[in-house]
Structure formats: structure tokens, C-alpha cells
Amino acid sequence: MGIADDESSLPVGVTASAAPLADGDPPRVGPFRLVGRLGAGGMGRVYLGVSRAGRPVAVKLIRSDLAEQPAFRRRFAAEVAAARRVQGAYTPAVVDADAQAERPWLATAYIAGPSLDDTVRRAGPLPPPVVRALAAGIAEALGAIHAAGVIHRDLKPGNVLLDTDGPKVIDFGIAAAVDTTRLTATGVHLGTVGFMAPEQAGGNPLTAAADVFSLGCLLAYVATGVAPFGDGPPSEVLYRVLHGEPDPTALECGDARLTELIAACLRKEPAERPTVEQIVEACGDHRPRRDWLPEPLASRIHGRNPTRTGPRTLGRRRAAVPAGLGVAAVAVAVALTANRCGGSDDGSSYTAGYRHRTLSLPDYDHYIDLPGGKVVKDDTRWSLSTNSGGDGKGAFELQGTTDAYVSGKRAVTPERCADRIAAHRPLREAVHFSQAPAGQWFCVRDRSTGDVALIDVLDTDSGDYTITVTVDYYRHAAGR
Image 1 (cartoon, rainbow, N blue to C red):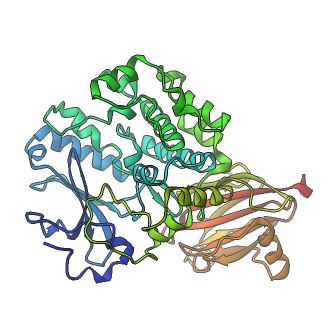
Image 2: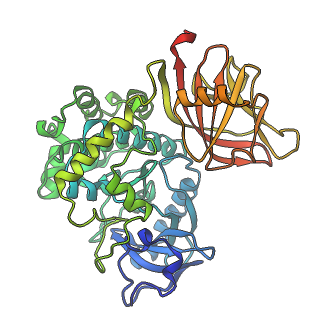
Image 3: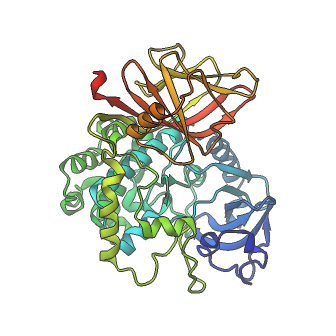
């Protein structure tokens, strides 16, 4: 059985990342038509599916032997319910699921990019600025996962996908469904031995700190290409995780601050590890931006490389580096773009306060404290809120000292924002949702200080005036 005949509605880059369906694969799962295979794991197989509206999704179909166990079904349903609550810029949304189906399944938003594991295997270790961007994005994803009451339990390079706007953490919480049933059947792995925390390896209760240890293992691997607790038989790796120290070469990434952060994540005692919030703060100036990936990978994700070399057996949503591009060339491409990932891209008159901070207002009674980068209940010196906009359709409310400029689908630098505001008639009362819908950018400037905030609109709702945005905040030196 080949790729479905009516796959033509999907971008080439999407279908190229899937292997053909095989005899015995179902044509549909729930409401989704299956068009190819994306990979397989201990709990089942992952397919590329298409919704009735043509939206690509990743469909995980659970193994039939697991489906026969009532305890697994109950836990799977609970974990899916928790996963639906996860809201974050670096986690793909749960689209649909059915824990009561003959074979339970879960569908999430499809990410076309390669996994970190695939990227490191093909292109070698990534340079420190890119690794710090990964650390910030993955830690923020873990924060959203933990806030929903979920522990990932299987954070590893194969469970992090690269997207144009940052890493995407997948498969969060679902391993708990297997773990709780205490299954020992062949092929069922409760986590991945080289990336699990000592308390998990020892069968002890887990907290969010277990995911931090796994993040440390992941960062060491992508920064050096060396697994911090080595390879070999699982029993030997587990012993080193429980009783040994990380391989020193896994920490030699050429960046002292990054080495210190990774080492802190790998402490044996959970209470001694940094929290995900502390990791985000430590890497705050290096959060992923829209141009953070090297062009070969970015092009592949966007589907601009139409080359297909025939069916391939792929891991989760992998995308091959274009043929003929060697490891050295990819490493150079990553290094060239690294300076744009975390460093300052604005002029000397602006200093980044924070970048790529995703914030949501639950209603018009809450405010985004722009200098502080947080959601608050009361108005602050310079904040952003929402209201009806005078027409009942919703708007971003601007304070009296605020000028705004809508830049469209392209982000602008803080200096260009100030230039555009000076050259055009700025908005001073409101930016209507219709002027800056999801997918659009606008910027605001405080006339009293010169500070600038760049706003990437992710979602708006005119029903209760809720919004989700990503904010980059810059302080103006002359205003200090």
C-alpha cells in the first residue's frame, strides 16, 4: 500500500517526511485519513493523518496488547485529559483522542521538522548559542507540561522536534500510562535509560525535577554528541545513572556557563537541580526566534525542498538533510545562524530585557506588565490589556503614553519600530483584533522612556477578549 492517492492537498515537505503505508495499516483512525507512516515506539505506531478540512496531524495508534489492559486505558484517558490542558509555544496541541476506541489513539498537531536525535546524528553537535536556545525553549515547554500536572518521563532527543519558531516537545505524559500499569512486556520501555533520572531508574516517586535531569542529559548530547552516561547494555547504563558521574567529555561544549547549567541539571539529588523557571531565566536572552534554524533545515520544514528519494524508514517526523550537504556544511550553517538566535539583533541604543515570552490574558480584567514580562491582575506603569474596542469585536488596549505600529506578518527590530512610529501616524488608543489577527505582529513604544515591545499575536478571542501573544521587550538607553 503506498501513500494515499489524494495526498496532493498536503505540502510536499509534509508527505516527504512519511514512509508509505504498509499492508495491514488502517486507512483511517477516528476522523482522520491516514496517508503515511511517521515512526514507531514502545506503545504503538505514529501515522501522518489528514483531517476532513485537510489539516495534517500526527496520529499515535496504541498497540493492541496494551489496549486490552483496563488499567492502561484508564491511565491513558487521564493522561490525555491532562495533555489537553497543556498550553505552550513549544508543545504541539492535542487535536483529538479516543481512549475508548478498540485501539486507543491520540492526534496532535503535526510538526514537519526533524528530531534532535536525527539532527545530531546527521550534522553533529550544535554550537552553544543554539543549545542555549534549545534549553530555554524546552524548559519553557516543561513548565507548561508541569503546570498541567504532567511529568514527561521520557524526555530525549527523539522526543524533541525542530520547528521554525523553536523546539517542540512531544509525547509528554503518555509514558505514565504504561508506567502506572507496571507492564514488563517485551518492547515496553519505561523511559529511555540514557536519559532518565536516578530516581526513575531506581523506581522511586517522580517529581518535575526528573524531567530537569533528562533535559541535562539531552543538552549534553546535542552540545557534544556524547551521551553523558555512555552506551552499552541497559543494565550498565542504569548503574552509571544511579551511581556514576557524567562523562567529562559530554560537558566539554566550549561554553563555561552552558557547562555549569548542564552539570547542575545532572545532580543526583532532585532538590539540588535548577527549576525549569531558573533554566529559562538563565537562557532568557537566547530564546528561539523565527530565524533560529540553519537554512537547510528551515527550508525542509517549510517544504521548499521538493526532492524525494523514495520511501524511507523514519523515526518520529524526521526530515532528511538535503542530499550532498555534508556534516561540515551543516555545522557551518548552524554556526552562521547562531549569532541571530540568541544575541542582540538591535542597535546599541536598545538592550533586550527579555525575548520570546509567551503570555496569555484570560479576560479583560488582566494585564500584561510589559517591563516585567508577566500577567498581573492590576494595571501597572506600562501594560497591555484588552477590551471591546468600541465595536464589540475586541482590541488590544493601549495606555496613554503608548504609540503602536502594525508591522504585518514580519517581525521588526526595536529601532525600526521606533522609526515606523515616527514616520507614520501611530495608533494611540487601541489595536483592533482585525488589525492584528493571529499570525500578525505589532509593536508598541512608551513615549516616556522610549522602551519598545514587539508583539507576535498567536491567538485572539472576541468572545471574552482573551489573547495569547509572544513578547520581546527592549529597554531604550536614553530613557534610563
